[in-house]
Length: 281
Image 1 (tube, rainbow, N blue to C red):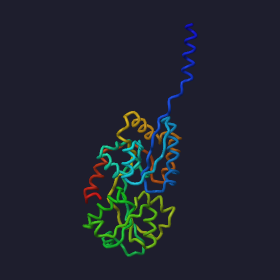
Image 2 (cartoon, rainbow, N blue to C red):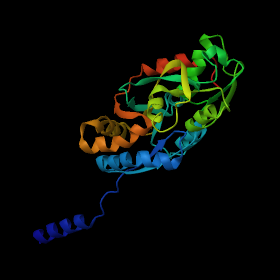
Image 3 (cartoon, rainbow, N blue to C red):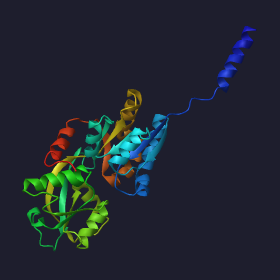
Image 4 (cartoon, rainbow, N blue to C red):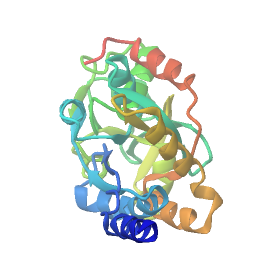
């Protein structure tokens, strides 16, 4: 009888359904199209799903309002976003840092370039007064805070001394300059190296650099416990140490990501200093 009970118990354990794999939503906050972002991030999603034994869904929110809304509805667990948005949402108690992106130059900070047509006659940022400046978004560290701070060094208010327009897309900003619809744009110097091989930059010229700014990072919703956050941190930090991890990282080079390392809170000081040049929009 005792043997029969043991057999029955083992049979019941064998028939018990396996525990469901945890599910996570990974949000990518980037002005590029969802189709392009999906192509770039899908290999990493698949790799992390295997590493973490979890179901991971990619989400592509646009802007801080949508990110905050999804966080409030528990529809975002982890998010890749720029340092400016992270600083704002961390200040509201919404996000905690997980890992820092390093760019293709191996740096956690970058610097932007002011770009004009080579035949425009514009030789310095001072020549941009009263001219149209095409930027991607008012919610970017490199796309807005850094050039705004640099122009302030020249006694220029980016909103009143220039005709500022936001295009929502880096290529649109570049084409606006190429077509003469804008006098200048700014672009991360690392992104410039990537795109100059894909677009016709022969007619463009760099006249100056912006102030340095922190690169984007991966953050976690503060409603998550320490265990999943630490598991994601370990998985991200070891990507460059394995062949499969390096393969998952390779498509991210298209958006200047080299790998992920430990987050340095000192980067928040750089973001805060950029914000203090003029009130945030």
